Image (cartoon, rainbow, N blue to C red):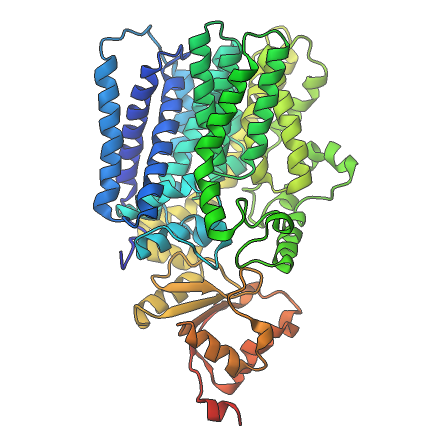
Amino acid sequence: MDRVTLYHPWGWMWTVPAVVLLAWAGSRWCRLWRLPFTDAGERLAFGLALSTGALSYLVLAVGLLGWLQKGVLWLLFAVILLAGGAAWWRVRAFKEEAQPFSWRMWLPFAILAVLVLPMVVSPPAATDWDGLAYHLAAPAIWLREGRIGYIPFMHQSNFPFVMEMQYLWALGIGAGAGGAKVFHWATLLLTLGAVFAFARRTGFAGSWAAASLVSVPVVLWEASVAYADLATTAYTLLCLLAAWNAAGEGDASTRRSWLALAGLMGGLALGTKMTALGSVGLLAVLLAWESVRRRPIRLVEIAGCVGIALLVGAPWYIKTYVYTGNPVYPYFYELFGGRNWTAENARIYREAQLAFGLGREPYQLLMSPFNLTFFWSRFFDPLPFVGSAGFVYLAGLVPLFLAGRLPGVARWWILFSLVSLVLWFVLMQQVRYLMTIFPLVSLWCGWLAVQTERRWTARTMQAAIVLQVLWCAVGFSPLWGRVLTVWKDGAPAYLERALPGVWQACEWINRNTPREAGVILYDETRGFYLQRRYLWGNPGHHTLIDYDSFTDGDMLVHALHRMGYQVVLQNLAFAPPGSEGEHWRRLLMDAIRRGALVERFRDRSVVVLEIRPRPIAIANR
């Protein structure tokens, strides 16, 4: 595809029905397993996870083969629907017990659709940084090239990309970024479905638990952007749910089916983030604990479950190894090395991760719940409000020490959350990476909110959840106001305000440069709206440009021109104070002074420069 539809105002009208049909197909597959789902909602959650996961792997396969065409992508969707239809035909005579839905179960879903969907279908802007940098940008690059391949400047493109394959499918059929974001929004529906199922299996309705989850600002914000953290959360929670169902199942055949389903969900989690490796390992520990407690589950069955998870997740790590020589690129560079990476890059990358949080002293681990509540900006990129984890979770921590007899599954919730918190504390204290425990803590808070024998605790939790819902609604109101301009003034007018400078510069380049022109981005990584080949220029992203070998701006410009680049886009707003002395920045300034880089466009802090290499004889005078 020479040109990709990056945004379509009505693209969501294609992907919302597509998600519904995928949920139907997946739920038909689940009926084939004859598992005792607690209700149709639980079956739909597992079904949608399976069908969207299958779509991701089919897109990966055709992408690696170089068949990224619109017709092929629609064919993949048709294959999944046909498989769902075949499953329906096989089980059409199978009778199930009535599985009623309570209106209370649907209330959080309705709130979610009303509050978040307008932001979901809007063009990605400043609040969707990683989406514009790589979650959406890498699929757009692959669509232009017609195949999935190695992107040398974007190390994130070597991460596990189950979610991004769904974005690629939406972009490839012409639904644009708004349609693509619907898939991530749907993973919150998966998470809520699993929360309700876990709650009902524990003996309570789950409405309070669901409300506490959707009112967490960072969760609600994640549902509106093209990231992957909610997908990891959904698949991990479904994995735990299936494993818990297996742990208490006496029938060997049913237990193994639950474990196989847990393995599939764990594999999909591994396909969204490398951090899920810890979650799958912890799952094995929890299952082994249940085996030791004389539960019917056997160690060989646990090994089979983990084996399925590793098998399903393996293609992403194999692809990364083939492209880079490191299965977990760019991490563990000291152990595995990696293509287009250096020890210095690894050091810079690790320092950026360690910048989050309030330190790693042992007492800070104990203070984490308090710090996440009151100093949340230290655990998130600088965006207003949306990085908060709320205050309900801290309120639910106090009764933990006063509670008497806990439901058996609560031990899983607590142990998984505590171990995950420790791993998060050591590795990277970014609140998004802690989201896998949020549904479990919400389940705990929801259970506390319905304890009739502890009325004061229940009323306190209910009040805290209601207040957080209202607080979240008020906090998000400015974002909703901005989104309304999409429908009032159109997407370009919205992006002029929501992505100032960057959008205008990208549009100028798209309109005023040859289609084959290459663009170098400095101090900016959000290249999604560029319909041109581009490269991140800052040192630290790759080793493609050897700045240390250049002594002046002319040498730099000649090197960039030989690489096929004609334009520079620089966002001066993100040039760190005092960085003028960096060698590569001095080279840029020297090239501008010599006339080898000529300003062609400027909007706010974003400048577009034309690369004009001077003749060697003149350059050497």
